[in-house]
Image: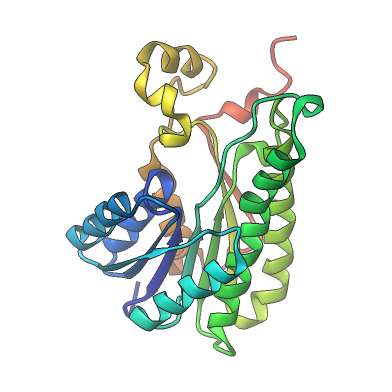
Length: 256
């Protein structure tokens, strides 16, 4: 991967974000662990980065708050210099209720974190790059529901669909500066966002029957894709969305 890089990972206290942090730690990177509330779990993520061979710092950050995002990047830059990679993994799940029953507050909260948060993180990452033209990568963790609708998920599906256009627009805008922008669309991954599936083996098995590969994914598998997208091997890849779901989204339209 060349010289030591500063890698910012949002939502890095658990799940996919924590796995991404550790994966980049294994490349010898300096990793800024952005977390929302749980400082103890963020410290565990930092310890994993250090154990893997990198350096780490933890920074509190609410991605839906402009002031918080600005301050978090300031802290990361003070520790390690400008970031050359940002993985935006912070997010909230769908409301799980029909739109007719969804409150405006819930709609706005999901959009604020999952879409506006992506905008704020992207903008501050790009601002930190300044006029630099050396290779850099911005990677957003999206969802298969950016393209596949799900009842009860109007808020989440709309946010992730909007994220696709954000990624594609940024890819065009930033390509001349050497910044590649891509998205990863996970399906069912065993993270705290899928807590019931993690804790209840029978429930998990009932869902895995719907996946062609007959199993849920692991955060480390998503992290491996993020690490590849940030590597020189993906130097010609930008504006793309990569699905990692064991074939689940291929079943759209099946069964009736």
